[in-house]
Length: 115
Length: 110
Image 1 (cartoon, chains in turn cyan, red):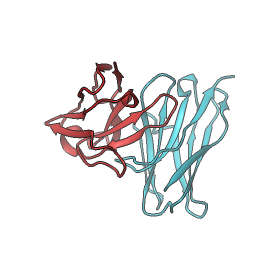
Image 2 (cartoon, chains in turn green, purple):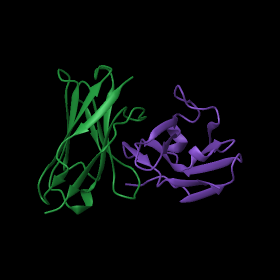
Image 3 (cartoon, chains in turn brown, yellow):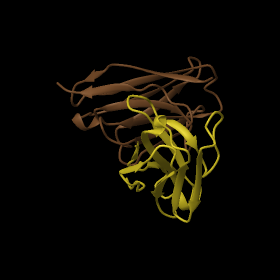
């Protein structure tokens, strides 16, 4: 069974860059789309973007100017960078398998933006 | 970005049937259909169905999905205490080239 695990700093200062990595185990990262989705505390889900294992990406129009998703097939990992963060970016960040339909999800990583 | 519309809350009795709705437009629900996710407090979402009524392996037949026009529905029969959770719909929006979500429905099993 595919498992996903997010890792990265839990606290980021305003105006800095949020960086998270998702490690995929129990299956190959190849031949699939991989997504990042976030959920502010007590609120709903927001799609950030996805990457195909070959490197093609698609980002949310509202975050596009600040987001970069990359993939490292040799490590079975994909990553998220979100620049110029503010308190509004505080959320649980999930990595997941799939692009248009997301089936497997990581446990989520809470990232707080605060000085 | 534009999202899908879900009622904030639904309450039903034990062993009853609940039907949750998700309204979008012709670019998303009406085009590609919807997926449904269940999320218990403190846990990641779990996929219940996709493209209207395809269930992943291991999902109970008590969960069934359908679509009529731009509105998708999730019907849960024989409600159990463990069905109490937040339910989200999602759909690919071909106009936005983005995955859009509903705001979620909190299902309470009385």
